[in-house]
Length: 146
View 1 (cartoon, helix red, strand yellow):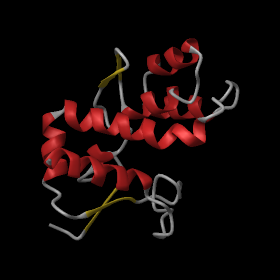
View 2: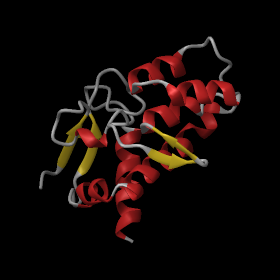
View 3: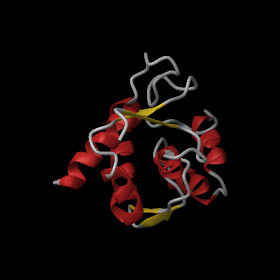
């Protein structure tokens, strides 16, 4: 196994690690089409905003809706976004046994979301980003082993 595994595009070998991958999750008593749907919806406290995002047909639309400032962003978003992402990723990899196995099979490899589009969740394309999604995946991998 490689020392590093980079992922981003759905069609890539580890595309299932993407939040856009079509694996529904059960969280907060509801089914969410993807991790992205859940994550973007949590940016808003009003149920109608969350539900509007949950109902859209693609994670790309969910992402656009979540990034739009047409809706009021929750005041504590910066404080809670990592824990919300962690809960969603944990749900995905514990609710889909085939994904759990793929994640466990990565061994000790460093998992890196490789994209210049994001320097918080990904590596910024040049390795200088925080790679928070990769770190969360490695944390969940460790939990699932235990």
